Length: 174
Image (cartoon, rainbow, N blue to C red; front, side, top):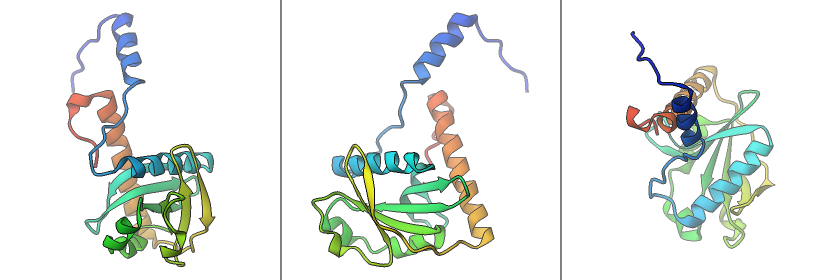
C-alpha cells in the first residue's frame, strides 16, 4: 500500500498534541452517577494492575459495563448499578459469568449493599476511587472462551485507540 508523504515536523507535532486531549465520547446510556462509579472503578482497577474497556459487546449479544484484563490474563466484568431500581430491572447480569473469571457489581454508598447477590463481588465507588467490599468468587474460563474474550478486548481497545488518533477512520467503539 502506498503511503502519503507527511508534512514537516510542525505538522506532526501539532497533530500529536491534538491527540493527547481527546477522550472517548459519551454514548448517552449512562447517568452521571454511573459515569462517576465507572471512573472510580477504573482508577481502582488501574492501581491494581488491571486495564479496562467499557461497554464491551459480548458474544452472547449482551454488553458489559466494564471488562478488565489483568497482567496474568484474568478477565473481570464489573456491572455498574447506580440505584436500587437499576438493579431490580436488570436480570441479564447472570449471563456475564460466561465471559469472565470473576464478576463484580459496582455501586455508590447510597445504594444498600444488601440487595446485591452474595455470589458476586461488590465494589463501592465514587468519582475519585473505589474499594472492594466483597471479593468475587473465581470461576475460571475455558481456554477457548478466554481466547475469544481476549481477542474481543484487544480489538475493541485497538479500534477505540485508532478512533482517537483518527476520528474520521470510522467507529471503533465496539
